[in-house]
Length: 407
Image 1 (cartoon, rainbow, N blue to C red):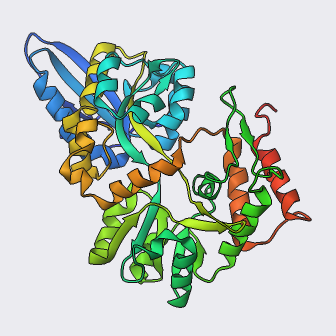
Image 2: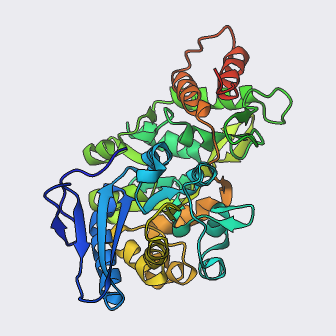
Image 3: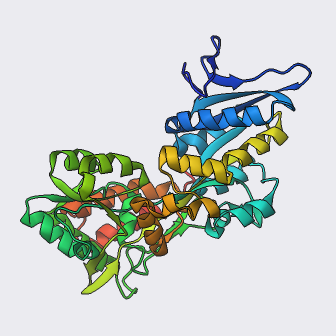
């Protein structure tokens, strides 16, 4: 179990024995309520403000202590299911993991489903719903990717076409940067082609037809298109686009909300964000897609203070605190009223991810997808096919993606 290091946070005092940070208030005659929560390190300051407000608003009812420990959201599921009895009362995770977490008995259904549905975007609530039961409190609606670009080189017309972006980058001895070593991004070229990959009903294994010979756009068609992009002098298969924007070698990249503030500070008045462009495949212009998801606060059903855990989760996810999350973290709200605020509507990156969400689907993938997709992305970026033909390479990749997880 990955628990906290010796950190100060949540505007509280450090426990000399555990090294975990906590916030607490004492009031004579009130019961003691101790809650623990996992979130990403980047949420520390935001959570400090929110939890202190929660404590202050409820001090007449209880002496509340809230203990925070850092947890990478992508590692939450495995650590939670590895020892749920000793896991925290609350945790932050993504909609892509909630099915496994709920199946593992580590998610307590929300206590106010009608209120959650009324106050949040329908797609956000649906992403956390399994068999008509909502298993988490939605807090963001922005977990996707889109195009960042330098307006000095690219116009609003230019960014509609990846061909034009690559042409402009090459002409200026610059790069369009994208990480093909991640299946999360590689999916972008498949999502609108009719080729599919996803999770089977067993919740563990995958289906995939990225090697299809029957689809109107075949697997080989997409592979050929990607190899052509990979050979373009204006393309770079990398995840270090921040460095590229800083040194001027990169003029466009595919990333998400998390890079907004950094790229704004680098590009200044030349900062631009938009939905992804189209790319050429089999003689057609295909809109690039994305995986799109939502973040949530989950509640451990084994909490010693289950009612209070739900109260805190609901508080963190309310309209006021989602607005605060946007102000402090720049994250797009799932709360309908918060999402309709003028500040959110004026945020270029959030508007870009909203525009891109029209060409998206939720990420529902088994573990065998990731390594196989990484291998395929790296192969296509270099054009160095390992098998006797492109089709044979794709067949090999699909076999790995769809393989059984039982040894």
